[in-house]
Length: 172
View 1: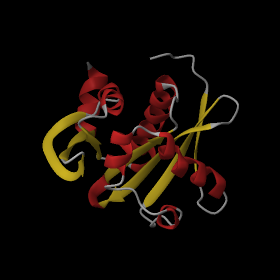
View 2: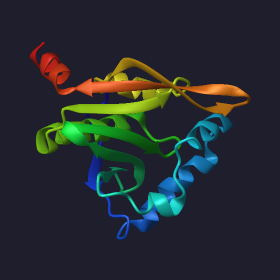
View 3: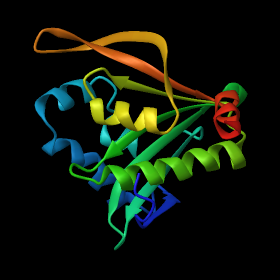
């Protein structure tokens, strides 16, 4: 990945950053039909999106110039387990998204003591699958069938990064 991409990340507040949340929520409007069909499965209504539970933190990924290009929602579960979901602006640089997510991953492990990070990704979303692999997440073998697109079931793959795997990769 390009080590020279200039980004900033910061935790968002649904009250103070409402306009950013609304912009991110509208990113899917311009998405391809297959994406919007699969996104409906888990997409919350806008007001629910703007009222995150206490166990969820939302981190914005900003490119040079201050434009929001990614929003990573992180939900804490018991035992240091976190589930993440990426919202990305269409056409956003994969390098910028990668660097932002890499920094967030490192912070989750270092500052929050994350033991396990999981993400559910549709089998068709090859760009996010590639990001998962580049960030060290691996397929867990669990598959969920949830939702339909053109009368076909939508298949979701679970990707996982365990703290033990990160330690092994750093040692190698």
